[in-house]
Length: 142
Image 1 (spheres, rainbow, N blue to C red):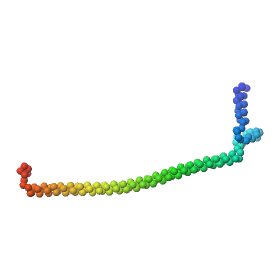
Image 2 (image 1 turned 45 degrees about the vertical axis):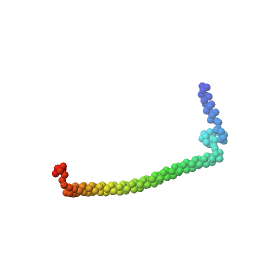
Image 3 (image 1 turned 120 degrees about the vertical axis):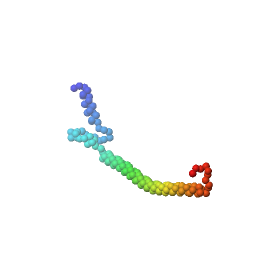
Image 4 (image 1 turned 135 degrees about the vertical axis):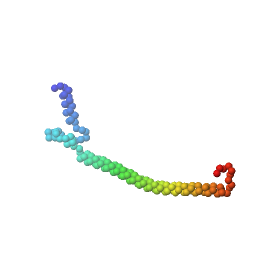
């Protein structure tokens, strides 16, 4: 057998036989050689309880973060709905004001047309009165 193959197999066997630190090891027997790693080197009861407590704390922290995010999103949605309702009310108020101003503008235009017509008729009347009162100017052509 070539030497590089024997070294390799020896390294595999030597590294697999060393248990990790701070863990009780179960002595090697024929019955437990095929057990999973967690059964060969089990945690102590306190380590298991501590692991469960740590996992519970992590889950509670994740739930708290998710509920805070949901509350934040719901609050943002509620605030957005309030702002949208206010903007719609303001828009309706501005449309009402705009309609009133358009009505006022139309009424002012009608008054202006009537005043212009009245001014034109008065100018005609004044011109006719002036023509009747004053003698004819020789420079004007009839």
